[in-house]
Length: 177
Image 1 (tube, rainbow, N blue to C red):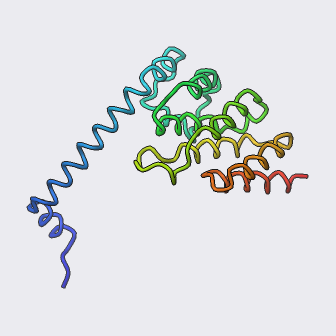
Image 2 (image 1 turned 180 degrees about the vertical axis):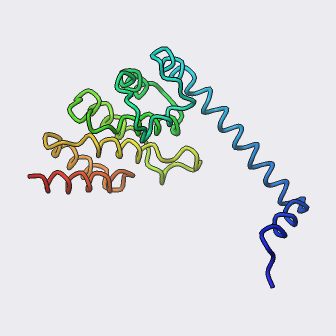
Image 3 (image 1 turned 90 degrees about the vertical axis):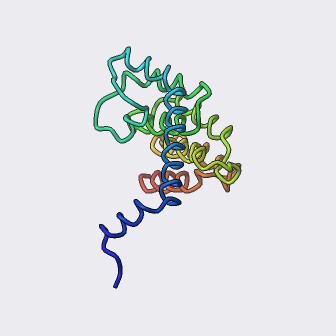
């Protein structure tokens, strides 16, 4: 008969190798969080000055709250060097349908997508996902006037992390016409 969950937990608590690996994972997580905190400190300070008390730019992602007055700060920070994880959060926080007519934002995201490496070329897992996050924002911002641009991104970056997002956007726009 197998172990109960309580028995397994007690056994793992006594396992020195397991506990060592758990401490190492915990320390790595703390170090990564410190890097993220330092990287986004200026951004969070600027957002705080606007009245947004957030612990991370990721607090905006899929948030039901209105944070449209934060958009200029978020757009500014798309153009500042950030850790890929923070860049991903900024891009995803700007995936707001109400911004679909913002040509400046669209152009910033397109250029950023082109300049951001795809995950296959990134060896450090925590640094992956930025190109896909940018594509997710572009998908939400896509409108009929941007079909040609989306098609060009698919042609120029067929193996990019955003290909599925771009195909979805094209299908959505085609179904509306």
